[in-house]
Image (cartoon, rainbow over all chains, first blue to last red; front, side, top):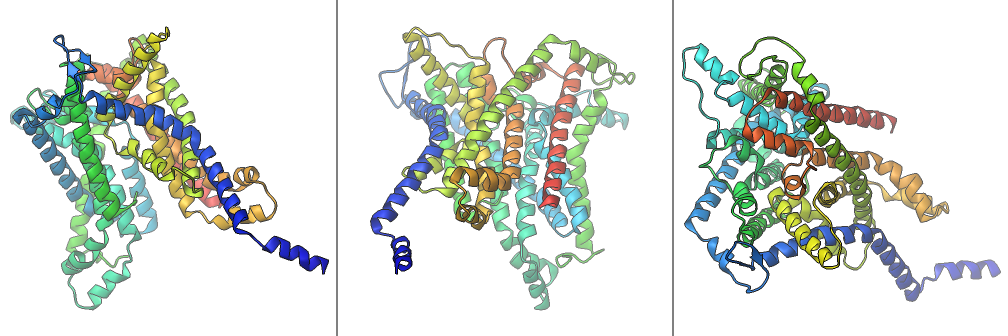
Length: 299
Length: 276
C-alpha cells in the first residue's frame, strides 16, 4: 500500500500548488522579458511620450522650444491649407504607388506560384535579392538612370528625341517608390497564392466557370490576405518616405516625410514637427489595425 | 499546379511577359550602376574607357573609409544586442503568460509599424532631453556612434522578435516537453532543444537586423554627431549634391555586400533544411 500512497501523493495537484506553479511561470516569463521590456520602454516608449509632450509645447521668439505654456497651436496648424495640400499629395502618391505595385506584382506572383519547384525557387531568389539590397543605393541608381546625361536620355537623343527631363518631378518619385517597395508586395502575394488550395480553382473550372470567372470568384478572393498584407507593407513606408523624394523629387514636390524632417533641420519648429509626427503615426496605426483584422500575419 | 494557367495559353504568355518586364525593371538600374562604376571619366554620363580608377580612389578616401568603419561597428553592436534581446522577447511572448504581457506584446510591435521619419524625430528629442537632464547632473554626453547604436537596437529588437516568434509559434512543443520529462532542467532544455530548433530563425533575424542597420539613413542622420556618420548617411549627403563616379563605385560595393549576405544566408538555410 506504500506504493499506492506514493502515487496518490503525486497525482493530487491542489489548487494552491497549481497557483504556485502558475505564479512561478509568470515570474520566469517576466524575468526573460525584463531586459527587452526595459530597453523598449526607455528607448522607445519614453521617446514616443516625449514627442507627444513636445507637440503641445510653445516656441520662444527665437524659435527655440519652451516646455511650458502648453497649447494646441501645432495641432491647429495641421488644418492649414498648405499642410492639407502636402498630406493629400503624399496620400495620393502612396495610393498610386500601392496600386502600381499590386498591378505589377500580381501577375508575377501568380506566375511564380504556378511554376514547377525548381524554377519557382530561382524566381524567388531573384525577387529576394532586391528586397534585401541597400535601399539608398537602389534609389540612387534611378538618379543615374534618369539624369539629363544618363542612359535613357542619351538613348532618346540617339533616336533624335528630346533629352529626358523627369528627374526631380513627381513622376521620378513615383518610379523610385514603386521600384523600392515592389518586392514588399510580391513576397506576401506569392506566399498567399502558394498556400492557396488550388483544388478549389479546379472545382470552379469543373463547374464550367471560364478562366476569368474562376480567377475573379475564387483565386482573387482567396489571395486577399496577401493583397492586404502587401498593400499595407507598401503603403505605410511610402506615406512617410523621405529618402526617395529627397533624391528624386524637386523643390516643389514636398511630401510628408521631408516636410517633417524640415521642421527639425531647417524650420526649427519642433512642436509643429512633433504634431505632424503624431498625426502620421495615428494614420499608420489605423492602417495596421486593418492589416491585423483582415489579412493577419502573412509575412 | 498548372490548374490556373493552361501552358501556352494567351493568359499564360501575357503573364510570362509581364513577369519578364518586372525582372528587367528590378535589375536594369542595378546593372546600369554596375556598368557606370567602371567608367574612367570624371563625368558620369560620358563613357571613355573601362577602369578600376574609382574603386582605387574609394579605398584611399579617408571620409568613405571612416564612415564604412563606423557603419560596421554600429551594425555589429546593434545586431548582437538586438538578436539577444529580440530572441528573449520572442521566447517570453510565445512561451509564457505573465502580468503585463499584453502591453509588452504591443510595445514589441510598434517600432516596426512606425515610419522611420517619426522614429528619427522620437530619438532626436529623446536624446536632446536626456542629455539636458544629464548635463544638470554634471555629466556630458554627445551624439555619435553610441546614440546611433542605441537607436538601431530600438528598432531591430522588434524585427528579430517577429521573425523568431513566427518560428516558435509553428514549433512542436512536444519536443520541449519530452526533454523536460527526461529530467532536463529549463536551461538545458532551452540550450539543447529549443535553441537549435529556432536557430535558423535567430540567424534570419540577425541578418535582417544587420541589413536594416546597414541600410538606415533617416534615423541615423538625426542622431549622428559631428564626425561620426555611417556610410549610408555620408553617401546620402554626397548624392543630394549630385551624381559622381566615386558614389557609383561605393554604391556597387554596398550592393555587392548585401547581395552576398543574402546568397550566403540562402545557401546556409538550404543546408540546414537538408540536414533536418
